[in-house]
Each structure stands twice: as structure tokens, then as C-alpha cells.
Image (cartoon, rainbow over all chains, first blue to last red; front, side, top):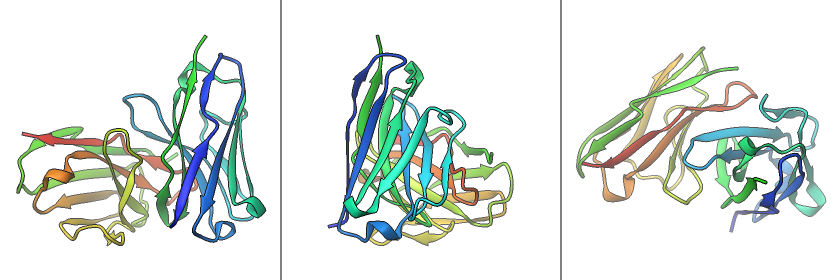
Length: 116
Length: 107
């Protein structure tokens, strides 16, 4: 079964850091670009970051550029999002998603809450 | 960045109704347009890509059309399981962007 499973979410204070992980299974992870998408409570979807299959190309939304770092380990079939200098407005469910033209496979999401 | 708008932001409809949702991009996106369905507490689900191509397993009552900057999602006969929020997304630019969503609820 093709699957993405996120982990690493939780409660963090403003200015703190958190590292999200996304474990892929059921497909050749190293062949696909991957993404992080977030959704603040009661709000719409916001694309956060993308990474190409070999990590050669990386892109960020302006809202997280300079604070978040996307990475992947193809040997471990895993995607990561290092989030630093977290703000209250980063509070959201964070999804990882596979790119196949559009985002065809999504994880179940992990909640990140930034609050003092 | 390419901005995406959707209309309406919400609509009320009955089972069996034909529903149309419109998505507009701030510049031409050459049919690099996807539609997603999201139900409360769940991850989004891909319905269509390339503006009109149905994702595997998605019912044929869902269809998409459009070109250039203007695109449409149509549900030909609304079913109870279709009450959800629908998002468009452009993937023409590597800075992907989503529309604000259209909530479809029961009249």
C-alpha cells in the first residue's frame, strides 16, 4: 500500500524549533519530488516547501523561507522539515505529499502548535 | 507568485444537484491545474489533474475543464459523500499555490 506517515508534531514555544518526519512506503520514494503543505486551524491549504527526487531543487514559500529547511534521505525513504524560529502563525496541521504532476498521495498530517 | 481565486467561497446544494466551482489564476497556467476534495479532519484527496484528467478511482460525476487562467470543477449529480471543501491548485510554477477553497454543504 502506498503510504505517507508524518510524525514529530507537538507543542513548542515561540522561537523554538521542531523537526517533522514523513515516512514513505509502497512506492519508489527516490523517484518522486516531495512536498510539505500546511493547514492552519479552520483555514485553507498552504504549500510550504518542495524538494526534488535527488534534492537538487528545493523551493520554499516566502512565509517560511530562511526559517524552515526541507531535506530527504532516500536510503531511509524519509522526508524531513526542520522548523526554526517558530511563530504563532506556524500553528497548523502539516502534511507531506508526493508529487506526480499534482499532489497525488498525502499523509494524515501532524499537528504543530506554537504557543507560550 | 501565481495567485489563485475560487468562486463561490461556499454553496448550499441538494443531493442530485449539478454543482460548478470556478478557479481563476492570476496568469496563464497551461492546464497545470488540480482539484482536491477535503473532508473535516482528513487529508486532501486528489480528484483531477491537468485540468480535466480524472485521478484513478474518482467517480466520473466529477469533471474538469478550462484553459489559460480560468478553470471549472463540475459535479454532475451531487452525492451525500460529496459534501466537503474543494480546493484548486496550480503546479505550473514551482511555487505551488492553492485556491482559498469552496465549501459545499447540504441545503
